[in-house]
Length: 529
Image 1 (cartoon, one colour):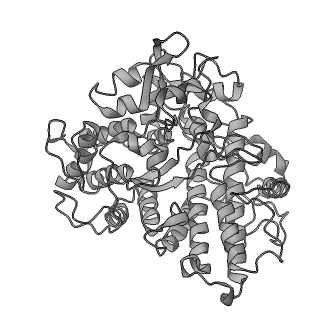
Image 2: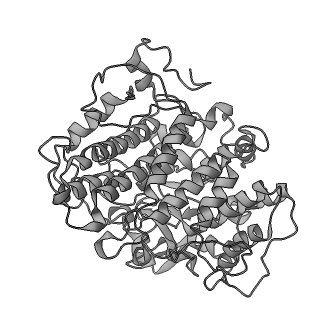
Image 3: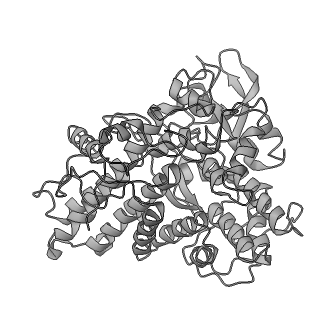
């Protein structure tokens, strides 16, 4: 049965706008016409357009992984607040838990995610119609290209269902579906998750790796890794362990249970290398949104840490307060100095200026040098990829799943988290090996180990659009209680307005209004009515 959604008017509008732009590296033109899908190159271009929705926006706004998701997931968390220099009331409202259903950033992420889904649906529907004899490169077979599109569709739906709960499930090209004006309700999240899992299962048959210009495409390892994360989110611990074992490199030191990963994934010994243009798509990067810093009709620029420090004392977004750095991070933890800074060198005066607060450093492009990057408008040409999922995430998810599955931490759960901590404290070499066990955790019960994993995730993934998802998915203290306890504990209580309704974002009011009351099954999320 075809599933139609109220978001179709948004999708059709976005596709129409996109068709008016010319692109060099990120083709965004209308690709739904029958005369386009004739060759393998057409199919590759269509899938490239799907990838591009992660790193571009049709209105030159912040892309999904170029800051917009960060605004939704980090600003409402206990990690981050809006900058005093930010005058956008919708961004400021996210940082104080006072946003409403007409919030522009909420509407933007909803529209962006469905824009990407529509691009994926077009590719999935149309690529199989191209004659088989038009495909000459087996790496980019029709089947593989469809699998790549299905992975991106699954990723976008994974973001949607975690942000909004029940959402319309659209699986075909919105411009060609019959009866597209039918008004239907939101699809239950369990059904959305079933589709996500089905799409990711398909993508596990993709190649294990690529070379040359194809590096950065979806691999089978990325599909297994994201599938493991989906199962952790669903608290399906057995399937999570099964999938994550297929990603963790076989022969990893001190693991007692066999893992079967043959992808060569590992941690960089230096944490900073996970966030440098020169080391992008390296051994720790399982799947990343690709940024090249190119400007033009569409930008592919990483805006998460953009600012001009010479004219503003504040960056775009700032840590919630200094306790996030000073209380959460040990001073010897290399993640602290990679993630934050509080001093800049003023080339005009020849002196270092120490500020009374911290700023984020993780996504500042330092390829031209630290001082140069911080002195100019870094956002104008940042080439740092956004790590959608990296190997550190897999190890911490594995530790969490083992703890939950077995009623307490197993030896391998300790190994997984201690590998992360060893790297943090500069003793990690490779393949799970390190010699300094000073910072190992041990002898914890299930609850204490769970707390330790979530705290470690906070340190590891700050500013990587993870924290709010982690806060709201944890239910051992009661639904939403871990989130509320965490944001209420912030100094100064900047999110005093937060309530249980904030564990889901509101469906954009413009989407509700499209129904004009004609479909009682399309309702707002609880508390946002």
